[in-house]
Image (tube, rainbow, N blue to C red):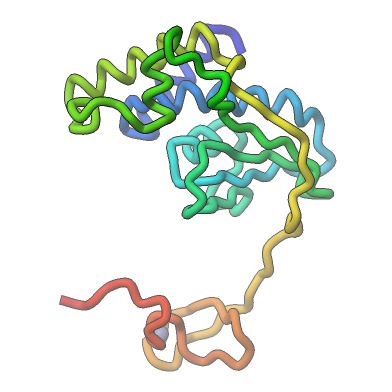
Length: 200
Ligand SMILES: [Zn+2]
């Protein structure tokens, strides 16, 4: 990607993400590196993101692996700023992450604070201080980029396509749902196991 292409992609990501999150700029370079190291694939590229972060939005835009098409899996509770891109045919992949030991707190102090989550209380509150911090992180990152991005080849353990479940009409709410257990007649909302709201 040329610097101009990168800049326009970043603006697109800011709009998609609805925030000028500095992780998006870092994510672009991470995904670019992963695609480069992965090389040509035999089937489709799939992705696993190791947390619910802005990286999810970078992956969706740059790789075409989306939550909706199920080529992207998110491990919500892991909370690492990392992901793996892999070939769906054999699980061969590249894991990319931030090597925090390579972050120099003198040369790039705001990046050091960002990844150790120790930015000042004013920054955490939001507003101008947060915007200024974001700009600082991106400007620091533009000078070091791949120096703090690390990767290694992996084999994804469960790379097969996820099961496709048959649909049925719930005997209680009459909505269509996916039958994940045999002989299931009532949807998870009606049994209570997947109920996430109360009617008001
Ligand atoms: Zn139901």
